[in-house]
Image (cartoon, rainbow, N blue to C red):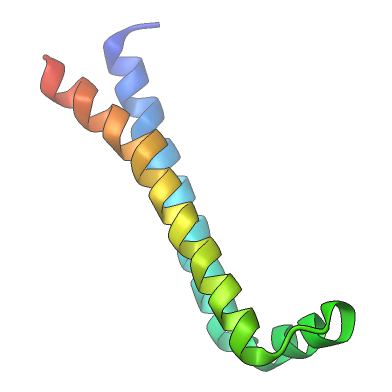
Length: 80
């Protein structure tokens, strides 16, 4: 596996993961009421707590994208 192949791999991983993050965000905005009712029914979680958990999960997912996809891509890009 060459450096160029690894660069492309990490770039596409970042694109795919950011697309999933954006889809998650749009879905949570579009169906907020449905998901809060679902969380209340199954887990007894109110809307404020659900929003806090959802935004925290989005933050950690974004942090993982930066840590595991974008940082290795930038390192490989700057290495050569």
